[in-house]
Amino acid sequence: MTLKPNEPPPEFLIRLKSQAEDAWREAYAVLYPLAWRGASHPGWSLPATDHEEVAADAIIATATDIHSLATWEEVTARVFLAARRGAVSRLRKILAQKRGAPLTVSLEPSELDAIEQACVQVTEPKRWHEVSALLEQQIAALGEPAAALLRDYLRGATYEELAERYAKPIGTVGVVIHRAFRQISRRAHEEPRLMKELSLYLRLLILT
Amino acid sequence: MSTPRTSELLRLSHQRDLTPIEESELATLLEQPENRNLLDADIASAKARIAVALDYQAALAPTGSPATPPVPVATLDAARRSALAKPRQAKRTGQIFKWATLALAASIALVVWLSSGHAPLNKRPHRLEIGVVAMAGTWRNTDAAPTPVPLGEGWTRRELTNRGQLQTWSQTLPDDVTARFWVDEDTGSLRVILRRDGKTLSEATPLRTEPSVPEQIRQFAEKLGLAE
Image 1 (tube, rainbow over the protein chains, first blue to last red):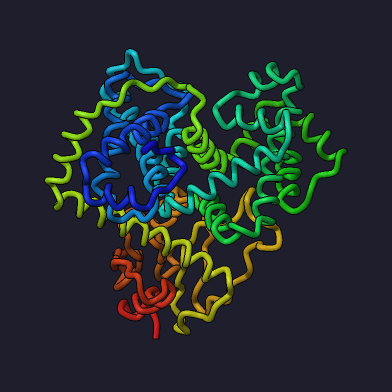
Image 2 (cartoon, rainbow over the protein chains, first blue to last red; image 1 turned 30 degrees about the horizontal axis):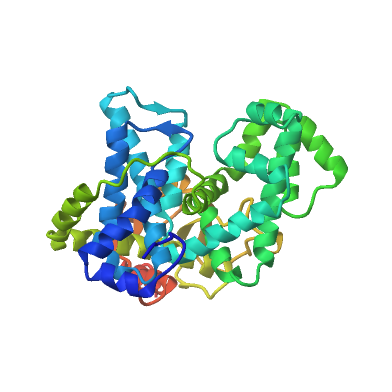
């Protein structure tokens, strides 16, 4: 059986809940790369050992809480969010201990806080899984180059970098980003399938 | 220095699409770093959340970057078995997650309830305040702007733009205010700072799943002798 992270096999989840060793070893093959990517970010570079520990911790935390999860999507979402949050915590710990090398962090503390909050405030992983897919669709619907520019911005590119990469004046880059956020917001409110869920998510966006 | 016109245009864009002339004006304004900071601040919270969601989608459909090392199966097996051997610790973690969720839900419920213009909480001549984190920003529809709330005689709603402001607000009690109530998401409780016999006191009560948050506020105020 070959698992894909976005395919939910109900019977497989039952085996995970029974802590079947073979099922978990099969799940590791999907969840570990997912957790590894969760702990990765263009704005930081964790030492390899810390990176591996954060990824493993995310899987173990999910394994111990597996009985509360009803779908495979919840498992993948939980693992990813735990890894991303764990990476931020580990970064702070390393910075506090001043064991810098080979750690690199280009994000401001406030940006790390925002990422952590984004992970903490997800209370329904399955819903978040669906909402994240919808957001991806909406960004794709912006068309190019706006979608690519927005993705780069979300991944931490500066206005100056975007202006050079897309051969646009900095002010125009700002307008493209601003317009993209407004369009996503508008389309989110027009989406009938997940309107309720998305509204809740967007409400969470503005509570902090 | 940022210009008031930038703020005005950003605010206007929450209500309607900007015209091509206004967008052109905004583009000129955004040439200045200070004005770009205003835009960043306007979308900062949404930016972080959408970025995490997009990264998750990218991780589900990996394109080969970043490279993942081999899965440490033996390490994961050992760690999982060890973690499962500590059910009490896991249970405690679950409980913390549970009340944190409850507290956040209560905050949202309180904001929604207050926005909907429900009935007053009491009619005593005390000057009572409820602090809520304002539901306003880039993602709010203009037709869903905060509604004036009839909190009732003696009650005032204080809209605060973020949790930091809420924390500052909740640590002070002006002379003309009897009590300030708020939901503390960090401890999963309903908290109040109040004045009694010339002294400033603070009290807290755990949030419960039932009854509604406003009803819990009412009961808490009653218990403190602040509502009839």
